[in-house]
Image 1 (cartoon, rainbow, N blue to C red):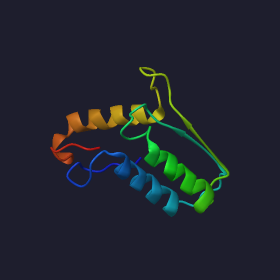
Image 2: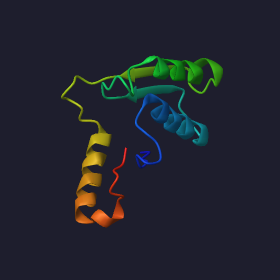
Image 3: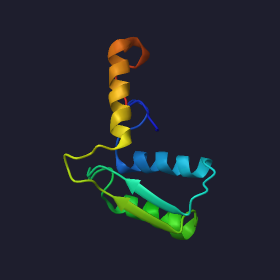
Image 4: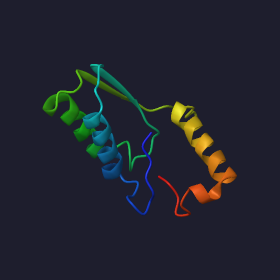
Length: 105
């Protein structure tokens, strides 16, 4: 999971894609097919920027042979990252000084 403080970067598709690009560039990948799950946030996950990024990974960098981007039904986002966010929120409440007051993305 990649996190950053909102005073470092925002939450637009550019920041999300920059984070994904860093992850894929620094990771030794042994998979040829990618299945990406996202919520239905149009500003971050459903736009021409993400389509261009997937195209780049497929045809320019040739990291993957196929990419499938899935979106769960709204209100049914029981993805593993949602549980991770719950753990983070609980830890923040237990120890508020460990997280900046400006919030995390």
